[in-house]
Amino acid sequence: MKVKRVILASDHAGFNLKERIKKFLIKKRKKVLDLGTKSSESVDYPDYAHSLSKKMKNQNNQLGILVCGSGIGMDMTANKHKNIRAALCYDIKSTKLSRRHNNANVMAIGARLTKRNVALKCVSAFIKTDFDGGRHQRRVKKI
Image (cartoon, rainbow, N blue to C red):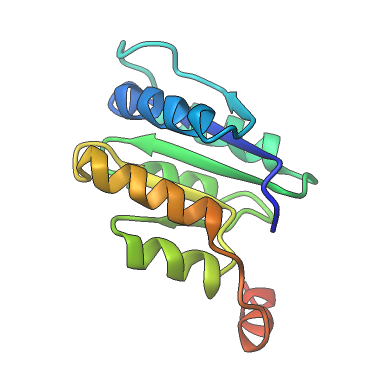
């Protein structure tokens, strides 16, 4: 899949890592839409996960990246939305498998649990890895 745009959102705990990911993606010449938050001032993570998930609806060739303290809350919230397949990514293998086998279109990262260099490698893997299709397509349809 040729990624046209990457949508980013974070809460306060994920703000600094989101900003770093944004710079990384821009340097890679990716089109980025940043939905916030705009600082490390306390906010409610579901607001940002819902915002990103709504932006993802009916749009092809785009991926979403959510960042909060653990990644768990963002992941749970995003998966409440139809056609969102959010995956909690914590290393390169989990990231690649989320794309290859589950056709994840949103990744969630825990800023407090994932080192910055690992997070950036995961982001790179997420945008480069394609869905394998085949038997996995049948399974994804059951989600």
